[in-house]
Length: 139
Image (tube, rainbow, N blue to C red):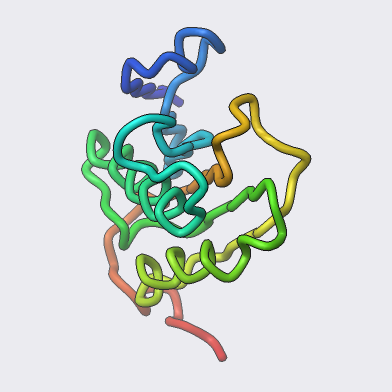
């Protein structure tokens, strides 16, 4: 199985020796995506940080020809439980129609204390049958 790796040139990728996303077989895995600490994501704003991190994670699928409809799993890490409502609102706004399986966890913190949210996603790039190709959604 050939692996495909994609980077963004971000500083953490070089520091860690990591890729932003790796395609392995039918799956594309997008590593921990955080909002930039300066610029677009508001410091101290969990909703905006989640919105930006989620959008950046989905954008990492583009080199593989995938979009939001291919996302099957999200993982959301928060540094404060007080931010759950705002972060889940950002997730719901983006993924309401896709409905991936999701894990939400509160962690001790991140390498940069200004970061409130980090997300990971997994996407399926197997046969394109659309929703319902394998029996559809179950209640």
